[in-house]
Amino acid sequence: MPYFVFHVKPFAQFEKLAEFPAFREASKHAKALRAARADPAGRIKVMFADNERLAEDLLCQIREPGPAGDD
Image (cartoon, rainbow, N blue to C red):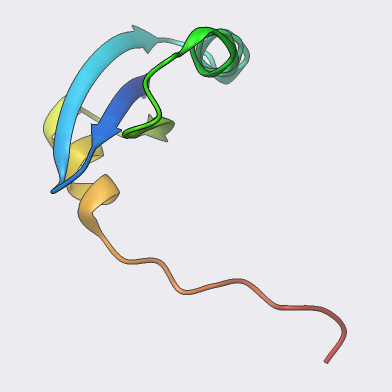
């Protein structure tokens, strides 16, 4: 499964920026985009999915926060 790099804009607008076969390359590309970006609106996200449509669907899902610490 490939890794997709998206620019996530307000109101759930997605722009696919790149696709990579391995996480290391996708992460490196996303970090470079974050460092070079001048536009504060939106975020750069990396998603792992079977296809672009599924990746966009995963971006729309609300995730529960992880544990806050020792419980």
